[in-house]
Image (tube, rainbow, N blue to C red; front, side, top):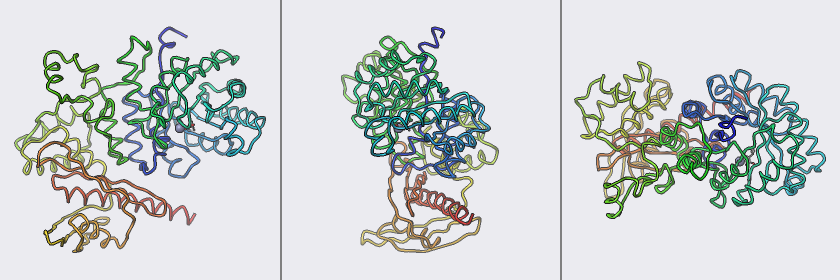
Length: 515
Ligand code: KIV
Ligand code: ZN
């Protein structure tokens, strides 16, 4: 290993697999591809695209990402079962850099209760699964699920078996978020010291955040010898989530003096990735969240503001620009033309085709007619909304609402279904309720509303509203987003976007059921 290899920490992003295991965080294939493209642009080393055998949707998603992504390694999860591994291999066939990630639980509790397997059978399954995966790809990761509650002797035996069978990465997850930094560091040190052939593999952390220690534990794992961190954007994931990528990456970068390791991540894309994942999943980022929260670089008290004006380093340990936070600037107005708009999109990192550009420019002009000051955030919301809904079969055509303090509200809504206009005039408890009722009436379909949330994109009473709607039907959950200066219109767009996704899922399931 060269010196730089020795100190280099690979970033394995599992937003699309473990992140999607957050209750309610389901993403469409198109959304996952957008996230994967951004992760690749950020120079993420490995993208875990899904769990190919879990469903046809997961398979298709791993396959599409594998076809599309060329620079990052693309990985599929698989249990220690041959059909799982075959399915992962099939989905990864066209990947430029494929990885199969196979796992089995090794803790006494999991082996006895969940797997109902004797330790000897688990060792055999490790050997069989890793060897089978190596028949398809050179890059095989093996994980000891619940490693942090596994007996050390057995963990070493399991790791040795996996390495002998050809695993090139060994992941020791803190599956239940139970460990502490010292314990996790020592676990890596012991396993690496004791297992013959350990130097042939890269060791990896995978930490859940049940005690709020996922990032600290991941960094401690690196101190113990791990050179891969598994993490997610915004820390989303099963239960309390996974280690947040933005936090581990910025901790390593900012405190390189204390932790002399580096990652390849292009940190200036962090904010963009955070926003994309939060928009797509409907999971808002808390204001005081490290690195990507709205307040992460805000200075409220007079003393702090005074210090910052004199020298930013008084209260800022990293610059907002280093994570892609730009100062909110007044960017454009209604006199701005096509060329200025195109320049702005380029600055913001968008590359749109001709049609998408024309649609966005038209919406920008409409917005500029109504809103005096247009900020970067307005343009980002508008373009994201347009790109996400461009192919939708359900679209909002026109909306009029009326509400009064006596509690009555009515929505007069026209939407199109596959290009055909449909209209409904319906009452509700308030204007949002009336709009949602109108969409349900047009579609003659009543899925359960799980979440409706609104937030203002910028400041001021003319700020655009960004709405998220989560709908559920028969265990299928979808999120829809919509942005508009009119909050009720934004709500209608979000509801229709969610209905569109649910309709596609419903149709796919019907096709699968009929064979
Ligand atoms: O938390 C965990 O143990 C996992 C494994 C499947 C890697 O997600
Ligand atoms: Zn996990």
